[in-house]
Figure 1 (cartoon, rainbow, N blue to C red):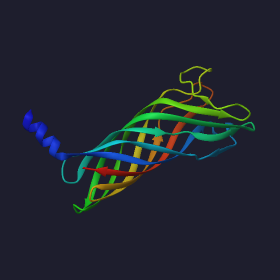
Figure 2: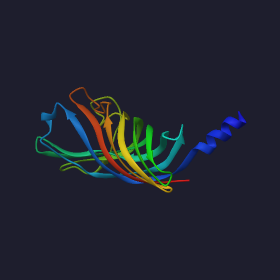
Figure 3: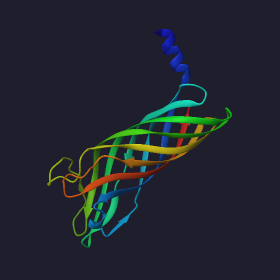
Figure 4: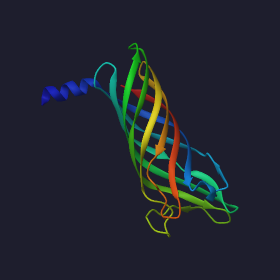
Length: 190
């Protein structure tokens, strides 16, 4: 077990990740909203790259991520900004030399909302209420798929990804809400 742990430790790099999110929420049916805007959020946390062989690794981490959307329903403006603790698990394929590596990645993510706020035209800012009933704003859990590309130069990684929400986060059965996020990140690995 000690030799296995030592081998895994030698193949694992860890560091920090910081970036921006361009977020929106898709609604089904789409005709319930008259316009949507793409607000900017942030994400940050710890990041791991575990090498499986020379060209394949698993990339994961533990991120704080803000998502949401600004939209209009019947001339009333809404702004939802949930914040999540998110765990991505991506399979990455590496191409290039040891100093400069280009990689493609994809995999699932799971997220749990820990807070956020809601603004409605003519009303004051208030914290989101999570649950699965009409009195609540949205459900707490989100699950989806990430697809992306990145470049690693020495110990820094610049990446761009698209997160496609698969979970209906609407608290009612009247419509579906799914998170969609374009993320741009800078990571440092050691």
